[in-house]
Image (cartoon, rainbow, N blue to C red; front, side, top):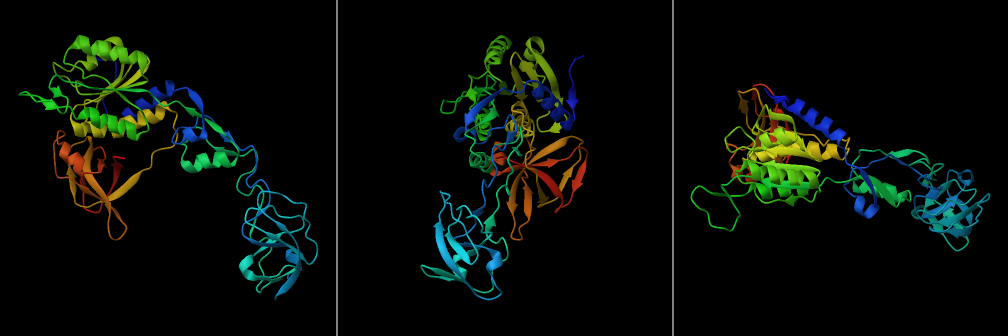
Length: 406
């Protein structure tokens, strides 16, 4: 009997991956903002200054004292100009105003800005047209966006362009992020041939390598493709143990079931650790998660639809958890364009085309192809419909979760 979990339900398998990855979280590094986009923040960011750092004008116009304005037109004396980029020692007194541009510091004494279009001005006077602006109009107050000392970015969050921009606005030149995992990719099987070479009887072209390389690159990683694993246990052992010493993550496809040529589970059991093997899902049931030396190992089945389902379901979770990501991926739901009948208890991942209809409703049209070997059906689709555990009979219009390919 195995000493590791087998035939887990899908959610329990996800929990195992997160728990193991949390124990092997990758160390942090500090990167300049230009290289931090898309990375996972390793530490909270505390604002060193306020935003805005000073009261400033939100519009081009004239800074004035609201108390000087009457209900109708009011004429004020123009006593200076304040442009963005410098703070002049200007003072607005009773009956006075200062020409001001967007982003320029508010002069002392002024509390309101009237926009240029609502005035008549000459070189000496400005007439504010009725109706007058309300008190405090068009003024950005210091700290109204961010207070100095406020926690503005949380560890575990993904650094989107907006978040990197926020750091830049605070004068922060670099950020601590978790290192991206290094990844070794293996396809396996004596039947596989490189595209472009002639096929002998019984052989097929290796499509899974390019599939995995593309999926990993879409996650912002730079995977390394290793030579194909032959159906020889000693050579499988040597290649995987070499990769286990040099990479953070090993992703394989094929040779993970219970056939005579499926050697990966035995290698992991003998030289590493198996955290679980086989999950109650369709397709992808034989998926294995383990550890080998310094690497976490995600061993996927060989059929291309199984590769998609197990990578989108488990690979993304593992990659995020190794980098300490705490934000869940965006969850999308769509209405079924046609009914679905699932008689079995396993969670199922069904190929589908997701589109927005003429009424703005997101819909998922299931692909009629069956069989986890049918790569054309994957190519013709853009997402997987996630059908929950247990038998399901879903009518057209039912809401379902969808996993986009990218």
